[in-house]
Length: 286
Ligand code: HEM
Image (tube, rainbow, N blue to C red; front, side):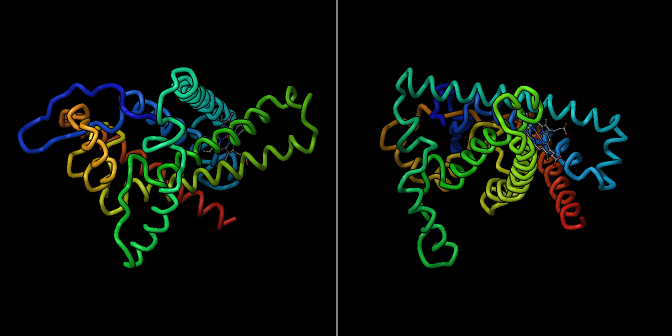
């Protein structure tokens, strides 16, 4: 939910090719915590859900049993909860206390607006060859959808997870049937999140033609001028019209960072796709 407030005092790397800041270091670290804990939660949640399948039993016996799996699931859950609370606190501090313009509404906000609806339909028309490609702003409609899917998912999965974890405490407020329901809710919403992230999010962000095989911007924080202009033309034009392009200049990502990002990114995609295949095979095989 952020526009850019730091890391902006940089110069172009070399003549001709300019690079622009898209994500701050804090945003990249937040995404790193999010995706690594999510992978951990998926890798430990799925063996619980499909505990009868051969790979779940192999995995469990390899790491010390289902007790160990549950231990790590709770560990990743705690780390993700802390990251989520930090994010919520930041959004509310910036929006409500510092009254930062544009965090809850406008071009740089994560909140959907009328342009997103028009872009969605315009995009469908473009897919069918019936119209021009929409000119996306800072966050395209599917990026906002991804954001809210995770936000909403965190509340539902998190609440149901803690209700299972601390069932005797929650039994003071919830009827017995609700404590059974939270297991179903957690399990189904967890599965939905896994399927969504490892298929739609991966395809939308990394595997679409203009980003294939991986969009590095979430790792490096910067994108080339060409990418900025073609992927988010309306944002580029707005920032240029406001005379703020210079303040967004960044250095070209160093080779070590690109290589490191590739290793981390491809490992994450590989684990995600492997979990997706195991999930689908267990789901349709059972
Ligand atoms: C704050 C976040 C979370 C908490 C507190 C939490 C907690 C739990 C707990 C306590 C269990 C039951 C373990 C047991 O049987 O003793 C569980 C199971 C499970 N969790 Fe989570 N979890 C969280 C996030 C997630 C996420 C993000 C996913 C998906 C990526 C997920 C997927 C699952 C699955 C699939 C199961 C197995 C359910 C079943 O047996 O059908 N969890 N979780």
